[in-house]
Length: 263
Length: 318
Image (cartoon, rainbow over all chains, first blue to last red; front, side, top):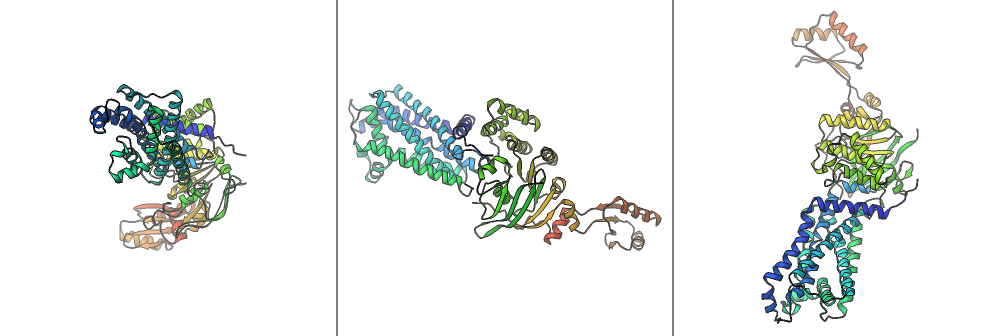
């Protein structure tokens, strides 16, 4: 008897499993979707005028426009918690041992987590854009710009999700997994140009913010959605960051998942 | 009979700790083979290796006719595993768990549903089928676990301590299910630390102790290894005890508790003969018990110690 591999069918089965998890245990996904929306409303409506004035903006400078691209990245970042915890939980339970002794497409289990999270994150991104427009976000992007921006956001989601899953697989418990992704879900969005421009940061933080991936990507998004000027290198840098994070995350995750088993 | 599982010289160690030290096993098709041993003997490691979950350090292993190192996917397609820790998805319902398995066996939508419902029925989970598995009792989880293993109709099933932690009723239910499986032609490799379980279910038993097979055979053969079959007679009056000791000179005496142990093979014939002698001498026996050698005696006979649960730590893989 020869065994035939069904990559698509097996991945689809795992995706259904993960979407059902998101539906049954919505706390994680709701947190991931809700937090960025709250941040958007808080900074946009409550602190917006103060920030705007402090940043020397006149009537030309609309803080909501400045804020929204960063909040989109924050949605992606806070969305990484759920797949990291999910992967850690899978490993601590017997179910993955079962999958590993079955003739199924090996990467399907993890790919299912990634696709599931990409779908949840897209919903979350759409919500953020919706709320942002409600409170005054006015992008002046063409369809092509929107497509490029969406592509970049999805690419970053895929990349960070693989990375978060790799981190989740290294931790033995769900709690450990949720802690280990905190640097991604908090540090990267806050220590970036999400809320304030580089020039207004203290020098140490500014150095970090300048070279971490989110800043380049936020800059690119602002350029695409609002037509703000940018360093042309940032577009390529954004793509390079996404590819690098995705590759490291993917291979690291697969290696952890297959550790010690018969190939 | 051809063999479902054939293992020669299986070795595995975790760092310094040698877990399996050159195991040879042969399991005939359509039989129940039990790996019996205390915690930490290496049973789970053996199952994990035979089910392709972890790699062996050395050894020739053939499962369902396939070399495990060369053709792990073919082995996986032929086996089913129900581990010691429940391998069900707690956030899915029982039915969804079964349908997920059916999907992974690519049964097709209609057939997947039919198979799931059929298994829910067979495993007495029809009512629980629409509840999420997290809410199940230990026995229900174990039944669902085994049902999930059966979705793909595997020819060889590994059951790692299938009744550990179950109440007596669920335990006997599980035994019944296992017997039915084998009646249907499936081969079962079962690990257990319960001697009565191996005795009750297995065609062949291998006793595993600290990574080595210390005995192998049918339950009957193993019992023959162990001396100790006897009839125990307890008396209340010391003079009755003294008289009985004279009438039954082959018995060993315990003066303090007034107990005589008469060697016996446990047959009705020897029991009847003994009762006749008791009647002839008009002995007043307070209590009579027949003690046939069980696998506890076997374990003691082959390892020189009782099942040493407490002295062995469970080795967990990293």
